[in-house]
Image (cartoon, rainbow, N blue to C red; front, side, top):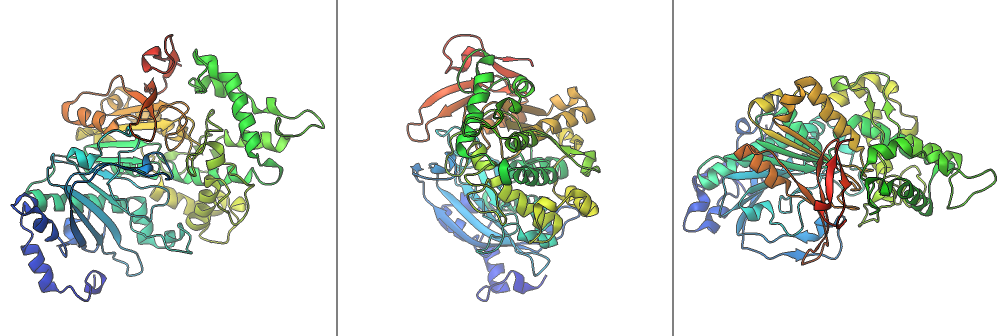
Length: 566
């Protein structure tokens, strides 16, 4: 690797060596932690300390190291999700940013951030990304799905870390275009997260004079896929993984998402008023079936079996917001149907499951919420997609073009798996986190918690639930139960809106990993996203396939529900 890839004009080899010498082991434990922190700037970590078997990499360099004093909680007025409005209180810490140089000079470096608290608990939490990444994950927020009034991991004494996964979004360039570069594609798929894990361990050793006792990975959506990928491909990397709403069956999601968007073209598109009409009809049919009318469909499986969207079709000659035309009925049926491949993908997977039911008209928070955010949008889909279209069409169309057709001008409605059979198989082997063999992860005593939201329209929650069943078939249900827990939250959207969705999964995971006490009696909370973060409702969080059934009492309290068998 040429020095030009990681040395600036103002940093010489001698300066690097001096910097390393001035950053002794236990650099943050001295009398002047600020100086110890700033001494990390210019530090180089060699490729041999970063790579895993089968990987290639350049060296890592710390480009900035800044000491930050303790700070108070800040809540913003606007953000894409409720949790994103909250900047938690932070302790005094050393904020280290840097880059891992690529092997291919045409590839972007892997950007990383590692936050080192002055008071360390001997543990770390690496945060996953979202969407197609390309933005540096700082590791300064709450754990996905954490209660808004909880302390961030950094404030609990964890070292935290994140990455952009090896490519940076650029103005005027598709966020999927990086897939044309093999190194950036592999870094996005799985390699960058393992490399950054090793960089963070090296920084912990230098900062505190010892290695971490436990390492955790937490992620939601794309970040949830990354967590499962670590458990499957790098079983030694993390002691515990929390994977929330993971885009696990990545290839299937992209083809199914493009298919679902195409079903809305022409007369198939549902206007916002019709989305509300469908949602109200689902509630009328299924809401009270769990024992209480609370605008949450808790027994989703029974509702999926009993509710037929064809019952909403307009009578002959009728039209309007209170009925659906035949194309709209077919679009809903398409959404709820599996996408079947004409050949087996990685790990023998042959289909992507259809989506669930309930939460169709979940109010949007920023750009997120229900069908209008993820599927129908606020305008009929077009090519090229526009911001008013559903996010799934924007993402699905872009992924089909850049990852599978490898043609940025391809019409995703006409791109079929069989037209790109061999390449689709290759992409599946790279991107899909569907291996049911978690034997290496289990053998090391590591633990996995998977959480799906049953009103998720960004990805099908049944992809993760079906994956968990494949693990049980492959390893045996008893063995799987020793290291894996799978939960499903009714009425909750992809980002955690629509129903109680907040729970301390990092605490549950840590207790399981370090004390061998498996999670029991977990509860979901619904909170205001403004201080004092009042709790408005709670529900039991049931292990799949159980669901919360009302047994009497205050419908806003978890104690009034029990986890019922299907």
